[in-house]
Length: 74
Image (cartoon, rainbow, N blue to C red; front, side, top):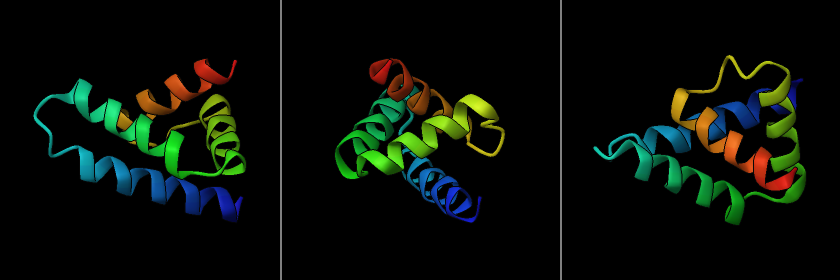
């Protein structure tokens, strides 16, 4: 779980960066795009698994972006 906690913090930090965008849909797009392009598959798989099992520590924008990742990966 220690590794997952680090991924949660990283994802929320990315979310905080994009949260400054007044267009929240654009912010979710930015988070989604960053996670998809910059995170290795193992990291994406782990954050998706966390989202599906709990997800409570993810910010709302990050949750929305990870939900899109989860839907994309099936």
